[in-house]
Length: 303
Length: 279
Image 1: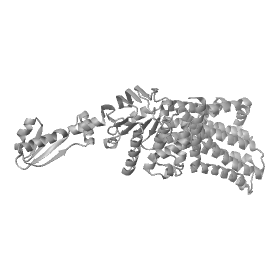
Image 2: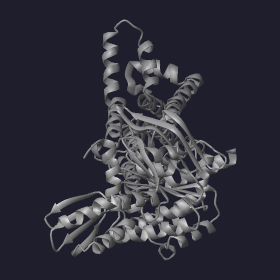
Image 3: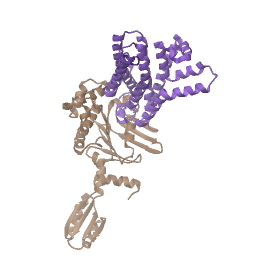
Image 4: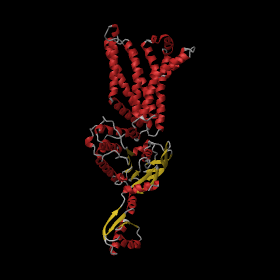
């Protein structure tokens, strides 16, 4: 659906995007994540033809059109982070404008309103809508003409938690319908419910393109088992040495064992089998967010 | 994209821009202001000679001219600048639609120009009708010339405003540039020409004045309107030169061509920059 090959974009002394390549397959939900200034918005703007890359190629859709070709934008819908529609215009009028621009019949407006749950708000003025409803309106204009590809730029960045949850639910529904979705966020937690793959960007470069499932495995591999014993913790050490499991003494009666989820039970069984009297145990794993940050910090060389 | 589709998209954007502009109250106030000024100038114009009542178009036209030359370019420049500069999110959303940038700019230009023209036509025309009803239509062609030339000046200023706003998409910078251009057109330019005339003593007047008038559309409109009213004598000894040049069919054609060029050239430059710029 999207092919990006070696795109670069410089703004003055800042290299916003530096040799970025990736592909997004049809029906996939692909998330660009990274800290602020990582190049996410610039990348999306290049996909939309709003910004021209200094180098590299982008092809959109089956016909592999460049984003500067308005025909390429016929098959995509765009939801910006924040947009102000003409405040005096009704929801219906706003959508009618975009439908007319795309050359769609009026029935398309009704369908888009239904899909985002705004049908009963068609007569409301855009200026009277809450942030969440404004973003729904933005999604409705993106869905006009039922495009196969949706590009969402930090779509919940300015919403409150309830509106964020509602918007994500809408996006999940579109994902289930088979839309190809490309979205950006600076928070992994924002995309982890809906993304199939994530592209982690840092200072304009791709530092990882991973399936979310792989990122979760990485998270599990980084899990730790914290064990508290009733007696001295030394009793557990020979068992752990025999199992070749890395561990660390964190107190006279406390150990932290590097064990993946699967080995944790094995370790606990072995310790109990060897007569080590366990007082308590606890799995300590990084959140997906912390795993993502570890990748970013690893790339930056930070501890 | 076929021509019919292109025309439709330009018309859709123009209609939206037109509605949005007319919805803003200040353009409405602008029209009311002009109507009131036309009526006020006509009704109170003879107050100094202790007479009050509607008078004809000649004095109204000349009195209205300076106000029009001040306000029309200012309104058009501000309208044009605020339509593009500073609205990055809305503009990005529009440009992300299946439209070309040329279509977006053309639509904005046509919509804004139509809204400004309607406001002027309502303001001048509404007041003008009342004057014609009460004082007759003698010298109405001069008033009509002012109306038409003011509308032309509005389109020309809009074109310049769009150029400024694509060069400086930041609203503050674009507004500053627009106000600087306005000051140059309505105040500074005349002072500069006066200074140049004083410095170039011995050079034939028409060699300085005529090119200078052609370069600044505000001055060109002033001269054309004054001549249309038949008050060329107001220019003093210069009037012979002005009437001799602008009063002919060739001179008029040249003026129209220059005004058209001064509208088209900034719009063409704006379109080129708009297409190449990152948004």
